[in-house]
Amino acid sequence: MPKDWIALNEEATADARHGDVENALKLWQRALDAIKSLPDKVQPLIVVHDNMARCLIKQDRADEAIEHWKEVGANAVKAGGALIANAARAHTDIAEALLARHRLEEAEPHMQAAADLWDRQFGESHPETAAARKTLGTLQRDLHKHPEAEANLRKAYDFYLKRYGEHFIETPRLLNEIALVCAMQEKFDEAERLFQKVFEIWQNSTASKRPDMIKSLNDLGLYYQSAGKHEKAERACRRAVHLAERFWGTTHAETVRSLNTLGACLVSQNKLEEAQECFERALDLAEKVKSLPPRFIAGILDNLSNVAATRALKR
Image 1 (cartoon, rainbow, N blue to C red):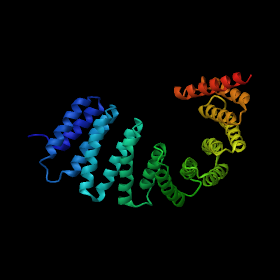
Image 2 (cartoon, rainbow, N blue to C red):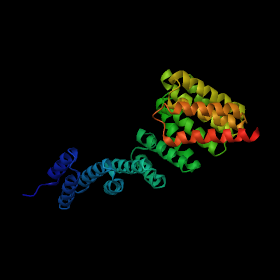
Image 3 (tube, rainbow, N blue to C red):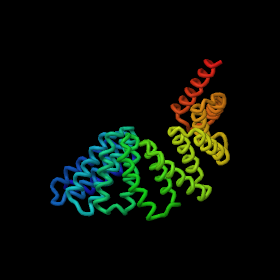
Image 4 (cartoon, rainbow, N blue to C red):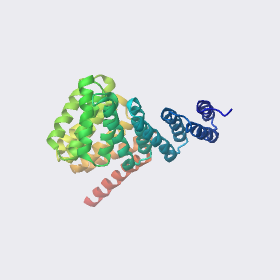
């Protein structure tokens, strides 16, 4: 008697767990064939396609995994009801797989679909909907779709504020993101107001939230710099360096990042000697920090070279 889909799925799962991926995929394909004769196919199809996708993504076979998650989404939407949540998860999984591979343009419609499906299933006032809006807004920010990003981030922020209050860690983080997007749209007054609000929240929070306060200070400094408020930018960046050194010490990635941001701020004020000192110190510390990506270290080196060359021309 041929095995039913449940037995084939269990055997495939066991093979995948023990590293025999190709045999597992063959067994899952047999399970899909067995499902064809069932009167109620949807739930079994969702289970098997999702298992195949998760196995493939672990093997870095993203495009194959995505095709199976698309099947999950299509079958779940067709069935409707409680299975809409499966469709939303499938679109989220696709978006996350694409984001991990820097395929932002492809990821956006899937994250949009996930947000809309969570909204359809649970409404705006639900953690899954808010989380999807947050991810979608951040993605749209990186795609320079600033009005769309702001709208989605504000929806997520409103949920966290109402549900958890302003001191819940995600609430000021989202407010910080909204401030950045406002600055990118040259809404400078609104951006400054929001940055100041974020900073006030971090100041009144526990020590465990200092890393977020340092990021907000650096973001505030970059905002002031872009708005031409150089003295305010310098104060914010110096405060970030001070707190980073106090909280983490000198050999930490965020201390290096803060020094690099301060150096850039000083360049904009033509304080080239001090800027060069910041970049030199950042580069020296970066060599002791293993977590910094090579591209970031190369950026510090470029900053240092440009400042040194400019100073040499002025002599």
